[in-house]
Image 1 (cartoon, rainbow, N blue to C red):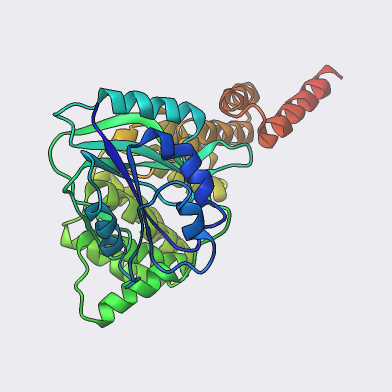
Image 2 (cartoon, rainbow, N blue to C red; image 1 turned 90 degrees about the horizontal axis):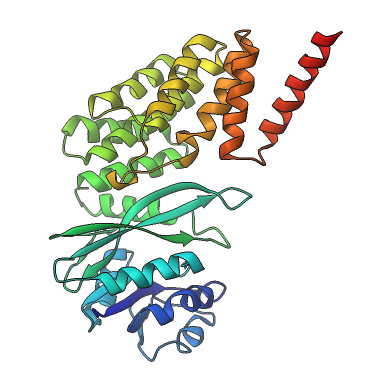
Length: 359
C-alpha cells in the first residue's frame, strides 16, 4: 500500500490540534508538524503524536511554510490539514478505503472541503481541494495558497470538515496582500481574485470592484473564479446602491458557462426583494434545474440545489395566489430540511388558510 505523510503548519492551536490529530493520525504513515511561532501548548500537543515537530519562522508566506513541511516528507504522498480540520468517522472509513486503492496512476486526490455549517450541522459551503498529492509537488501563493498539481487527478467523496472554534485574524490575508503590492509584487490571476474578495469582506467595495473588474477584463482567470467574481461584483454593486449594475454582473456570469444554481438564486433574490414574484419564481425554478457538480471545483452552496429555491418558490407562488403550488413547494423544501423553521411557519399558514376556507 502507498504511504502518506501528513504535513501541517500550525501556530497557537492548542484548542483544536489534538482533535485534528486524533481523527487522522492512524490513517497516515508519518506526521510532520511545522510550528511557525506558537506561544501556547501547541508543540507539546504535537509531540504526543510525532517526534517530527519542527520550527519555521513566519514570513507572511503560507506557501513557504507549507513547502518546508512538504520538504520533510519521506512517504509516497503528502497530505495537508489545518489544525481545525477533522475527519469524521464516516470519512475516516472513506479515507482508509481511498488510501488502499491508491495506484501508480494517481498523482492528485481531490477531497471535498466542508467549511460552512448550519446550527444542525448541515454543510452550507463546500468546495474541492487538492488534499493528497504525490511527493515533490509544491505550493504557490503567499496567501490563499494552492498546490501546483500535475498528472492524473482523482476525485473522491471523502470530506474534510473545517470546524473552527474561534475566528482567525480577520486582517491577516488583506495585510499580506497589501504588503505584497507595496513590495512591488504583481498579483497573478488567482491572487487578484482573492484580493478582490478580501477587499469586499472589508467593505472596501469600490476597490474590490476595481480589482475584480480588472481580473475579469484580463481574461486569464480560472472559469470557476470568473463566475464567482461576477457574483462578488454584484454584491459590491448592491452595497454601492447600484442595483441595475448588480443584476448585470450576475447575468455576465452566464458568458463563462451554463448557469449555476447559486447565481440563479441570487437573481431570484433580486426580484423577490422587489416583489416581482413571477420573475423571481422563474429564476428559482431555473435553480432547481441546475445539476450540482462539485467536481468542477468551484464554491458550492448546497442549499441552492434544493431547499433554498423550494422555500422561495413557496413564497412566490403564494404571493401569486397559487396556494396549492406554494404548499407543494414547501413540502419539497421539507424534504431537504425537515426541521426548517420556515417550513413549520408555512405549514401553519396553509393550515390557517384551509380552516378559513372551511368557514
